[in-house]
Amino acid sequence: MSEIGAALSDALTGSAIRAMLKRLEAKGFVARTASERGFLYAPSVEEKTASKSALSQVVRVFFNGSPTSAAAALLGMQDKMSDGELAELEQLIAQARDGRTK
Image (cartoon, rainbow, N blue to C red; front, side, top):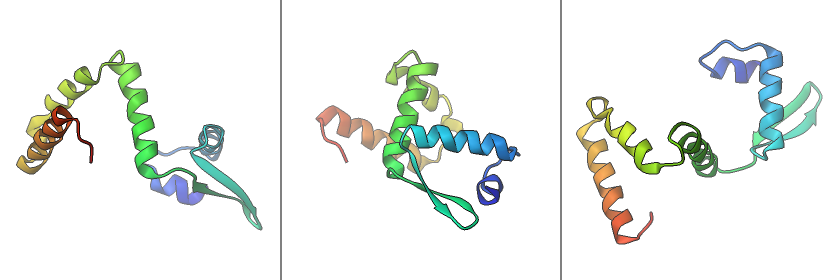
């Protein structure tokens, strides 16, 4: 628990961390194993899979399911993006147009 709490930017209580881990375990994102000192938690899905799931949820909840609206919101932050990041976005859009994925 202390490692998780230290890694998070917000100060959370032990019970809040346990509740979060329980939800993540129920959704299949983490696996729990017993140890001498309690439980050990480890990711049970790849980071890319978890990121895609979380992003899908954000798009559904905050952008009414519209990836275009989400992309427009991100592009509204262009002053915080480097030229390289903007070029990467342009490349991803071109790949999407061509029907290719990375």
